[in-house]
Length: 325
Ligand SMILES: [Zn+2]
Image 1: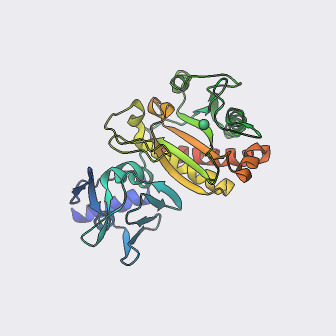
Image 2: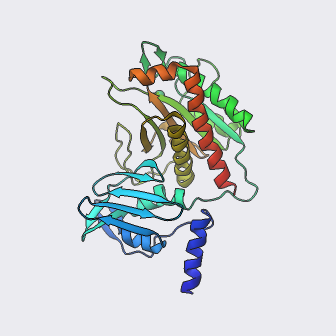
Image 3: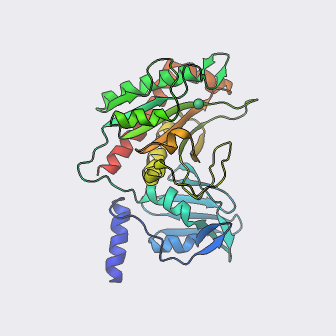
């Protein structure tokens, strides 16, 4: 029986997606409203290598396919080279690093043990949502408005995805105001399999740069966006796709950072209106900061937007490849 169990785990790791991970058999404790498990126990449970640097309070978990890096008291971890923001910080108890089970279920397992689509269920139609529009200009700088650049990036991404064989629909194709709540509805009506909202960041006084991708915050967790929405147990329609939201956000963030070389601000969580109401896997991309002079000039450049679009398209293609396996 034990041999069979180990074989199943190996198979799951070799071919992610064959079985969803289960941390239910590990011993847990409660801390600050979260259920935690020891990282070394979790690693052992999945036959992964665990390294603990006591002085730095850093933990590393590796396998042939994965590398996970954690730091005690930090919400930021690195998963296969991509920054991922956890809902609860890594805790320190009995001389060991511990992780919230909510983060295992919503951030780590969806990437390490992805859920496959039902056989024959393909990712064909992508809804691109150019952020803002019309009376809602979004961020601005001396070069223009966010609403203009999101539309330009959306059109570039559309042509690249169509060239890769996807059907693409847009929530707006001109400088038109579209209510936030009706954007996912447009996607649903047009039969989209994924919803990708495009935005550019801005911060008063500058100082911040880099790219980040948002997935809907899971129930019970606080968000990790700048506004830092507090925890709520409310389940939104978008929470039905928590695992696929995380998987899509992970690969689009990886694609974007690899393609552009932008600072990796990580996979983050927010309860943005377009993510709350999406009925298909949905993400929101913040492609760079309009308030940073260097990034602002890149956002203005059509050749750089082509590179951004390539990164996002690479992430979508990788997501498709994995869920259709
Ligand atoms: Zn925006």
